[in-house]
Image 1 (cartoon, helix red, strand yellow):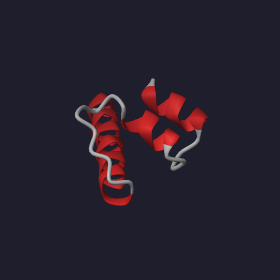
Image 2: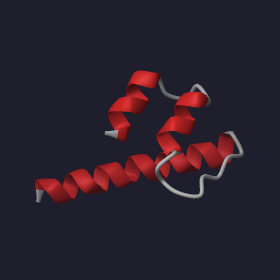
Image 3: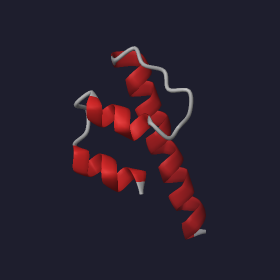
Image 4: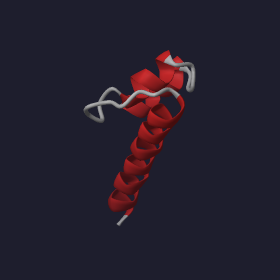
Length: 55
């Protein structure tokens, strides 16, 4: 049950990141893997946060 909740939270973070990139920065990633890196490069999140979220 906790594992499922964690997966849901991760998916929500990915979805929110994708929406932010597509709406504000006009970037539409082809896969989920670069989302946090792109958010970092665009200055939306810090590099440390990007590393933590990517783990």
